[in-house]
Image (cartoon, rainbow, N blue to C red; front, side, top):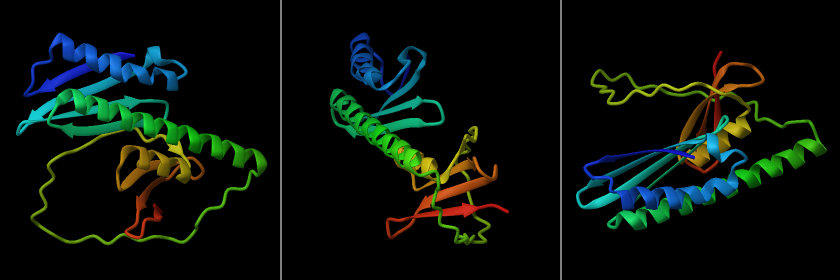
Length: 181
C-alpha cells in the first residue's frame, strides 16, 4: 500500500504516520494485490476533535470511511473497524452474487420508471464540484458501491444499456433507480 497522508490543522508526526500505516495496513489481508493500492488519508482537527478520512480506490469500487473522536488515535482505530466491516460486507455480497449468477443467469430488475422533481430556486449556491470516471456496472453493484460509501445516491454507467443511471435510497429504506432517456 502506498499512503498519501495529509493533515489539516494538525502536524503529522512520525508516530502518527506510523500508527496510521500500521492500522490501515492491516486491511491488506482483504486485497489480492495490496502493493498497487494508493490509500488517501486525511487527518484534520476541528474544535478539538480529530477526524480521519480514508479513501481506497479499487477496481470499480471505492472504499471510504470517516470517523471523528476527541482522541485522534481512537478515531484511527474506529475508521479501520469501519473499513473492515465494509470489506467483509462487500466480499459477502460478491460471493452471494456469484452463487446466484452461477445458479441462474436471469437478473430480475424493477422496470418501473422513477421520476425526480426539481425545484426552481435562483439562490442555489454550489459549494463543491466533484468529477469522477463512470465505471460500467449493473444496478446491484451500484447499490453495493453506494452503501459502502455511505451515500444516499450513486451515479453510474449501466453496463447493459451504457446510459448514465442513478440509484438512491428511499425514505422507506428501499432503493430506487433513475434511468436517463
